[in-house]
Amino acid sequence: MLEARQITYIYGAGTPFEIKALDGADFSVSAGEFAGVIGHTGSGKSTLIQHLNGLLKPHGGQVLLEGRDIWDKGNKMRNVRFAVGLVFQYPEYQLFEETVEKDIAFGPKAMGLSEIEISERTAEAMELVGLDKSIAAKSPFDLSGGQKRRAAIAGVIAMRPKVLVLDEPTAGLDPSGRREIMSLLSAYRKQSGAAVVLVTHSMEDIARAADSLTVLSRSKTVARGSLNEVFHNRETLTQIGLDVPAVTRVLLRLRSLGLDVDTEAYTLEDAIESLSRLRAGNHPVAAETTSPPVGGTPPQEENKRGLTFNSPLGRGGRESDGVVSC
Amino acid sequence: MLKDITLGQYFPGSSLVHKLDPRVKFILLFCFITALLMARHPLTYAGVLVYLVSAIAVSRVKPKALMKGLRPMLFIIIFTALLNMFYTPGEPLVSFWVFKISAEGIQRAVFMALRLLMLISATFMLTYTTSPIALSDALARLLSPLAKLRVPVHEFAMMMTIALRFIPTIIEETDKIMSAQKARGADFETGNLFRRAKALIPLLVPLFVSAFRRADDLAVAMECRCYRGGEGRTRLKQLHMTGKDTLTLLGSLLLLSGVTVLGRLGWFLP
Image (tube, rainbow over all chains, first blue to last red; front, side):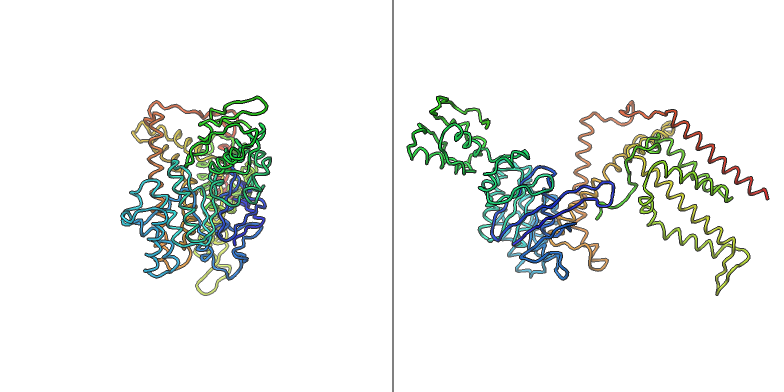
């Protein structure tokens, strides 16, 4: 669907302040897929995604949208921008219209749609991001921080892009705000069948939502593939200062202590399932496993509830303080 | 993109010119311009030119960077030179239609162009080799005697420092908002003047909103650090005149006044 091949980009080319932001980075997302992009600050994530809709022209490499180079002559860049919707970091700073409704309608209007279609799409986008109809006529500057963010995302969703790219959409939000954004992304994907590309720092968000993962480090793509493929190669991640999700770390630790758990679990729910399977199977080493109540508890909290177990090594213990060193 | 604008841009370096006390650089620029404007004799022009070229050589500022700064001024320089060439009275060498070109005209045109080129290059030399903060600092120090006349020198200097500090930030912000609106299909490049002006609204509104937000934040941050204005305020980096600074200042003054005086004498001498 959308593919970036060997992208090289240099900021300030030809000045004394040259910075190579990307050096042969690869990325791809297929139709309907939820792709994660992860990497440290300065690894080139934001630069990479600005190539996906042609805001930046690569100094090397190419970007293919449905098999066609977006920089081909005769290709209308605006159509690329409508097909690949890009939500920047802190998108609420781009709001400008008098009313929320008008602001969301900015993109569809630029597409040259009819009035009816525009208002239909605006209403749909507002509903999708969970904004009440009553604030449609309000000024976007009167909204709360989380509402502003959702209004800005709605402005891009209203263009019905085939690929929705978001740069750290949960940055600076509280846990409930984060969860709302993440669930609206899943809902949008389910409803529209569009591909979603999520750029983030949070392994947990990726583990919860993404099908595939691209890892960037120092301007290069260092790992790419399904979650299993990337997380199996833990050394690559730890080398660049990242790691598998916290729950997976717990499971890996349990396994190293002799418990035969399935370590291919990346979210809290999966981990609980993996552990209860262990208990149901009446595995000799798993004497007792108390699972925390199933629910939307953040991953960091799960071992506070105490995963008690007795290991055959005689090191029966309680990992109780929420810090698991592996 | 916008980031490529050279607006009084500073190129960091470690040459003698870079390290010179910014106050000295200010004074020298002032004297240089005075000498340049008083120059009439080719000797003075030659002296001033040699001075400027050697300063550029010592600073290791790339001539290419200097050229880039000069390019926008080229039209004015050429226009001025042409006007001088055609409108200087004298024995015409060539004449066609209403135009007459005299030897004096050519001479004056060349000198005028040279004068403007040197004037602009010298100013660029100051901004290229001095950081904006050092510049406003030096200006504040040089103007500090005016404080006795109740001129709010400190406030002006602070305003200038803040403005200079935020130019790159605002440019970056503009770039970001532009990208964000382009991603929503905004079109800043096509259409007639009216449409283009209208297309700027999605850029300007968020830019102003964020500029005011930044100003608010900065004011709070300054108050948190107990900023109360200029009275009794000390500096982290004191400006000190070193031996090198004094030497450069005296040497340059001697040279510039020397060529000026010689040029003036030369004017009267045969």
